[in-house]
Length: 223
Ligand SMILES: [Zn+2]
Image 1 (tube, protein in one colour):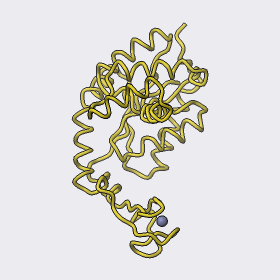
Image 2 (cartoon, protein in one colour):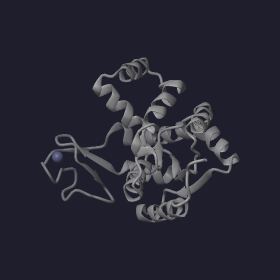
Image 3 (cartoon, protein in one colour):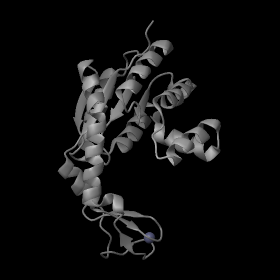
């Protein structure tokens, strides 16, 4: 069972993917996590990736595909995986299709977690972070006992610049512009499923779990 997860920042894609991966015993493969680990470990790939990031660029398609090729070759990925953060572009998706052929695998489904800009603004702009210990609160979902004060350490709570409404709107629009072609591409191949990400977290999870269960048992290997 091989999945790709797509969705705008703040939709809860990573959280859902981590929980599903644990329940279905397949790895959650996040290209962001892999890059951070490689950079931290100072590997050749890490240094290469860092040089692009330092110059303010995205990692090129070819490098992104090499990262995925390495990761999918590991034993724990033999029975399936959830890809998060790859592919990001149509050229990457085309290279990924080629890679799957080489590996004798197929992609079962691309899950697109959808949410409206308004819901994401509401959700993310309620976040407050402790200046001292980094604990995250939410004005609606997890309010501190005393307004503006951290429950754990008494530190001052603040709103990160990233979580301010204008910044959230900007990130949302950039994401949509960048992924519109990719979503259309997978839609035309009949691989795309849209799942609402702006309802209660658990309801989204239930829908995803049903989708996974319906594919589990079918083999992702091509003989
Ligand atoms: Zn604190």
